[in-house]
Image (cartoon, rainbow, N blue to C red; front, side):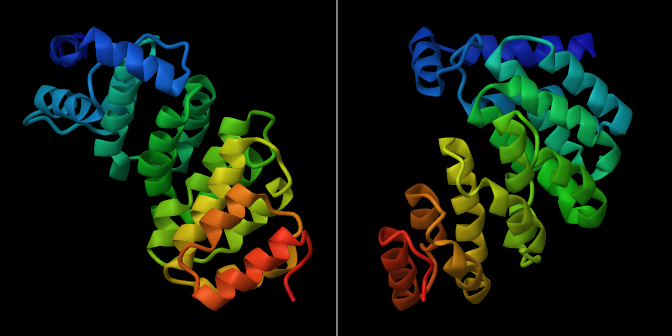
Length: 242
């Protein structure tokens, strides 16, 4: 494992630039250390280090944990990509570990990658098994964990899965002031609107007086124009849609 990490870091350190490192740190408003390597370069580093090697569940978790145990952003992103490559070997048993990583992320860039590319793949395979954990996350005091409880459903929603789980979690969060929660609710509804516009509109209708502008603008993007206008008119009047 140490050799694999050394190979990853050699590529990342060579790819990084001070200007990009300082720019990324400012953009993400993160306390982490940045090397200045781009996400495609992080992906290339992981791919190169693991070329010809297929990691099992335990190996992937071990390597990811070692990469994650650092304050370097790119190392943590590499850990996520290792888990993504081995996502089919993961199960709901890994959700407590993943929740810990979400708590330690401190930035949407890591949280969203974990939620969509790792947690989301577990949900795709075992949505009901994951639901107990994600329902609990939706009540967590850490807003990043609450965000992950929503975005963990994105892949399943894109595949046409039910909205019931995610809207059940979103409803109590509708009036939250945290931008990253408001945006996440809108994001999952927007994706659902591509396949299930009627269901999205029906759920939003009684709640337009409670939802934020960020949530509403995202949620109506793929709804029929007349329906979107009906909902936005009600939102602007701060009342449920007729």
